[in-house]
Amino acid sequence: MQTFRISTIAAALLLAGSAYAQQQTCFPSKHGPNDQVGNLNYVTPEKTLAATRLVTKGKAYRLGIETNKDTPAFPPRTFNIIVLQPGQVAGTSLGPSKTTYNDDIINGWVGVGSQIDGLGHIGIDGVYYNCNKAPEFAQADGLKKLGIEQVPAIATRGIVLDMAGLMNTDIVREGTAFNRAEIERAMQRQGVKSIERGDVVLFYTGWTKLIGKDNKRYNTGEPGLGRDGARYLAERGVAMAGADNWGLEVLPFEKDAGIFEVHQILLPMNGTYILENMDTAELAKDKAYEFLFVLGQPRFRGGVQSMINPVAIR
Image (cartoon, rainbow, N blue to C red; front, side, top):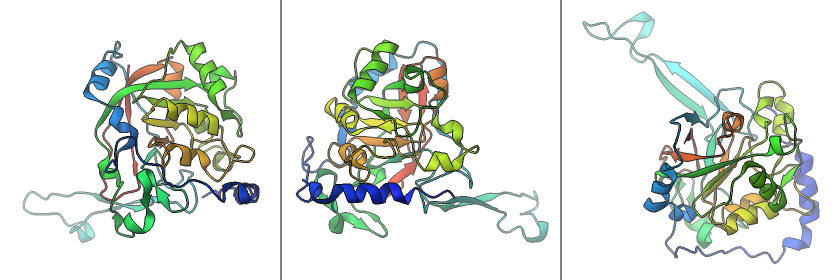
């Protein structure tokens, strides 16, 4: 396991200081006081039906990366699979048909590999999406509100922005921020006319090429979404934003930025979900810039996040 660069966080903490002393913490949902799904409210039947019209070739893309014990992740997260043969000690079998079987146990953190960050993941001084205070809903045996089981079935318009292509590089350098100017340049280059309410916006940076080759570099920085870019997407009512890296937002953080401030802008402030470690390489290669995005994630009751393998269909 490679460790996250502690100096990055320490430096950002020193910069934060009094600038965040009077920070607003409660951001009521636009969808009402009982809302638990955020901008997924914008994924209506009409939105889904319109997105299906983007399917013209019938090619499906899996967006989840392979996850194993060596997958780099934010520390102290780890992941292991244990395979057992219950009731089959010393090679015995079950019944007259001599049935044998393997079963598996996952021993690890949910936030490893391709994942969705739920609305209960990131807060501001203990206050989470729709003004939910941690002591009132965050319990050791699961979230009592904002659990990942609340996320509905999703079929909506997806967009991938090829930032590596925009910047004419194989792998975008860590610390490169994607803000409104970069997003709009990528859209213009690709012929994407608009970003709309209920869309899923993904970035391709080439960063996952480092997995298994340079895990230290992969895990100690990344190109990604900047604060202005996050606000830009949130203003448009994007349902989800994601990238082919482990944290979506740019690292090292932008000058004067708080710790994972992009996460705060998206999740507690605006109800925009975050997708991490998305495999967007084939979409970018095929120039499949707009597609039908489909996700039905495991419904871990009270879960903060979930491992996922979304599908893009063009």
